[in-house]
Image (cartoon, rainbow, N blue to C red; front, side, top):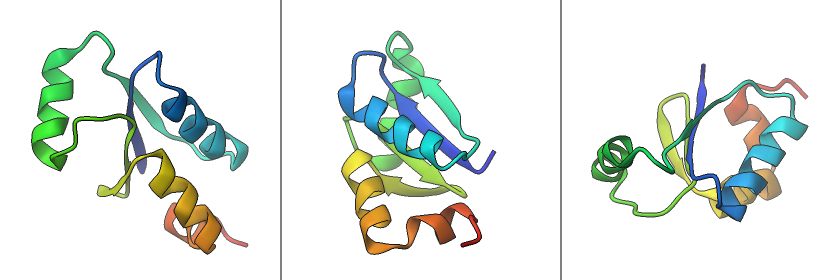
Amino acid sequence: MDVTLYTKDYCPYCKRAVALLQSKNVAFNEIDVTHDETTFKEIQAKTGWDTVPQIFIHGEFIGGCDDLYALEKQGVLNSKLGIKE
């Protein structure tokens, strides 16, 4: 899977990011770290971020929800996701 999100179940930004990807019919892997401190610490060490969601497209860390929506606003999210327009 080319899109991975690290999320927590109570996070409204996580839900917004998931909703945007679902609206594009993109397959993604959602890893819920709400109760998985080990995985969350591993991803924190990789990105330097201590917030969720943390979103990767084709292995590239693109940031969080606001970053995902910024790519959409700039008109580049579809090409990053491999969606033909």
